[in-house]
Length: 357
Image (cartoon, rainbow, N blue to C red; front, top):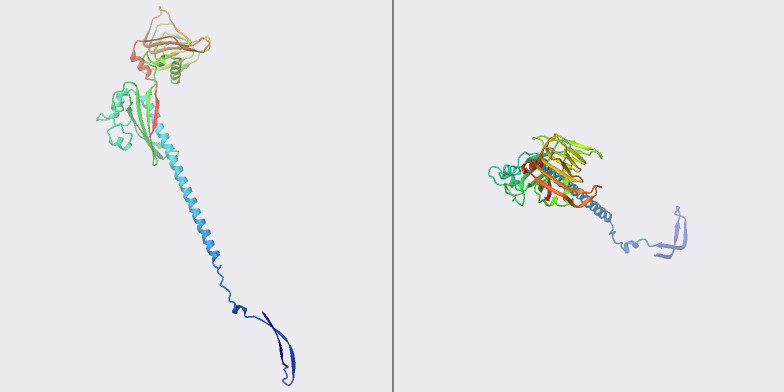
C-alpha cells in the first residue's frame, strides 16, 4: 500500500547560512505489512525425512522377506534332496536283499528262523526303534552310504519277513514268497519300504496257469533267457551240441535259440531249446529240459538217457515263427521235484509288490 502526500520544507546545505525552501511530492511504501499480517509457520518442514525413513523401513522389510524366502528355499531343497536320497537308499536295500537271498544256500524257512533271533518270534513292526529293541536279526545289518567325498551320508538296513499268505510272523515258508522291510536314513529324512518278493522259477506244478497260455509260456521263456548263463544262437540249418554241462555244485541255465543235439554227456541245470532237440548219445540230465517254441524232441529208443528232474514240451509258434493261439502238444513229465528245485535255485527273487511308508 502506497501513500502519496505533499511536504514543504527547506534544504540545508553544508553551509548553515544557506537554505532553500522546497515543495514537492513524496511516496511512502508500506514496509511493515508483514507485522500487520503475520505469516503462518512452514508446516512441511521434516516431511522429507519421514518419507526417507519410511522408504528405508520398507526396503529393510523387503530385504528381510527376500532373505527369509531364500533361506526357506534352501531348507526345502535340502529336505527334498535328503528325502529323495533316503528313498533311493531304501530301494537299494531291497535290491541288495534280493542278491543276498539269491546267493544264499539256506532255504527261506532257515532264513526266517535266523531272522527271528533267539526268542523265535518275528516282530511285525516297521518302526526302526522297535526293531532294534527286539531280538530280531536283520538280513542286512546297518550299512553306510558313502558320498563322493568319502563321508558317510546315511545308513540302511533290511529285515526279512514272511508273506501275508503264510503269515508275516510265520517261520515256515510254503510258497517261496517273502517280504522285506528296508529302512534308510539320510540326514533327518527316513524312508521305509516294504516289498513282497517271489522266487523266480519255472513252475514245478503241472497245473500252474502259466503253462496253459501262450502269454504265460512266452513270459517264462523271457525270464529264463534274462537269467541264462549261456545263450546260443546257431545259424539256420546248424545245430548246437550240448554234452557235458555244469556240475553238481554249479548248475547252469542254458538257452538255445535253435536246434540242439543232446549228448553224449551229463548236464546240470536248466536247458531251454526253442527248436528241435535230438538225443544223439547217452546222456543224463539233472534238472529241467524245456522245449518251448517251434520244435519238438526226437529221442530214439535205442539211445540211453535219463532225466532226473522234469521234461516240459509245448509248441507256441508256427514254423514261420508266428505265435499260435494256444499251446500245442503240451506235456510235463516230472521225475524228481528236488532236482527241479535245485535248478530253480539259480533264479533270483523278484519284487511283485512295493509299498512306501
